[in-house]
Length: 299
Image (cartoon, rainbow, N blue to C red; front, side, top):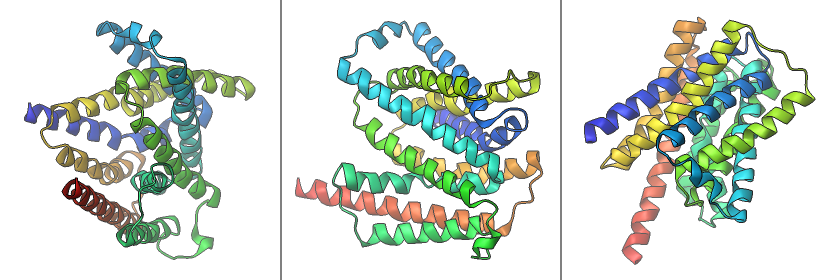
């Protein structure tokens, strides 16, 4: 069972490692909101199929009014708002810049924990934020620390804002005790309604075959099967921390794929900046684990 957990986790990391490259390829053929339309439709159909195979589709019609309203909020945050912002950022930035900036969500999760869950922010939290912020500056300015070297200020803002949206989504979602697959399926179904309206309100064109295949790949491997594999890995593992820490391999794998497939020359600043971001996140995790240990001693 333990080996199976690592197999599922490795597949998840492999698929997520290709996501940034897939975004850029798809955006060569479609607009950012069209990419979201086809990708989210693919993910939604996949998740519904999973529940149908498991004979659990009826569960989606058994929630309370409050739970449906919560799903409406979650669906607005993800997939709608999160991916609208993220895909727009990718349309403005190099993949090697957008991807690490989006990976700041573990830190934004901490900030929302302080605001929503009333968790305290200590000195180590502040140090972690400052270190990751240094990484942001290194990546976005390509190591020059000059605003004039930033490829797109608007793109950098959107990439960072996407991590804020995900942090908020994560905190709200973790407080919802329903099954993860059930929650995700319902939020994607409702979220697709928002996405449909957004596309209707804007110019919408049917993509050619290459564009459609790229969008389907994003929906299947970024939003659909990969999430199910990751949940499976967590459920089979006897050490959640070991499995969860594997996720930090994703951005480094992503840089390799970006270089190999997109032929982007990976700048030293992208690597160094990413190291600072990951270092900040790891320091943050140490702080969180220490707080949990202190609470357990008190209890």
